[in-house]
Image 1: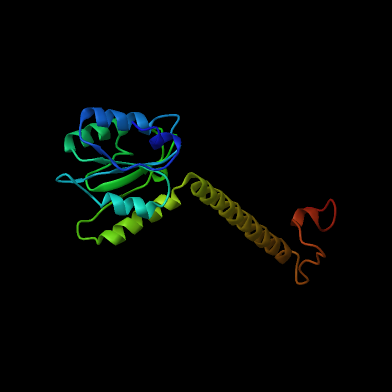
Image 2 (image 1 turned 120 degrees about the vertical axis):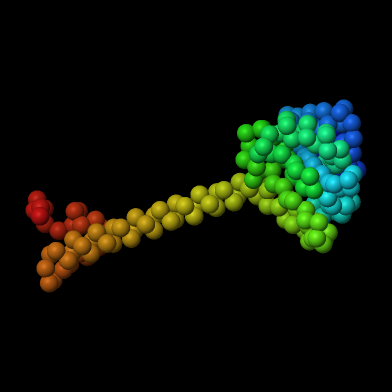
Length: 196
């Protein structure tokens, strides 16, 4: 196999997986610790790829290796090795980023089914979009944003609970309510030593 497929360098033309040796080569490339570029696996029906490989390569616009698994028997063997979560069904396209592990979340290596009635341009654009959003750097930034959103949501919930507790505590103090000059937990404000 050409080293450019997993060490960097210019992307090469698609490799047709038509024999058992080709499938084994693809499996070695997928799990190679030296691989630096994504591998796009394309399947199809009746020996035809789900999408035109040249259009797919143009839409991705970045270095990658592309394999077309034309034979259904070889696809079954590949899917047996990949497992249920990372399988590549017929008429499907999946990107496998470097450092692939069988236990990986399938969302980290997204795939799209290609509908027979779908215009080629729409399917190519859908895959290019999924490809871009799944880039490891982009995925990490999205995870960090999700973490920040979760923290902000938790903090807002704490502020709401604190405000309700203060209102409840101040409501028990009578018609004058609370005369707190600064916001804070009710237990830290008011008279010392007095408990209700």
